[in-house]
Image 1: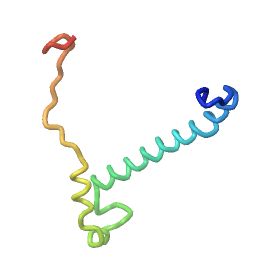
Image 2: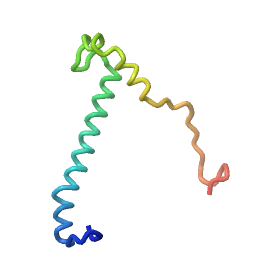
Image 3: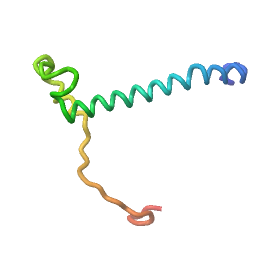
Image 4: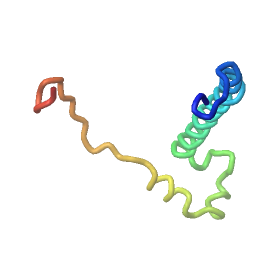
Length: 85
């Protein structure tokens, strides 16, 4: 805000009234969406859409599967080994 000539007092008010609430809202909505996706993956027939949704959206499950990463290997490397600094 300083770069465009907005006073510090006004930029502080803008930050607290606009930026912080929008960031909090996005974080909250992102978490809620993640919870809905996890519930869908765990129990696809039990979601709010119901079993009939599968006939209307046959590719939905495939899209979910393609969006999930698979952990193939977990390796713990203590600091200083394998050339790490």
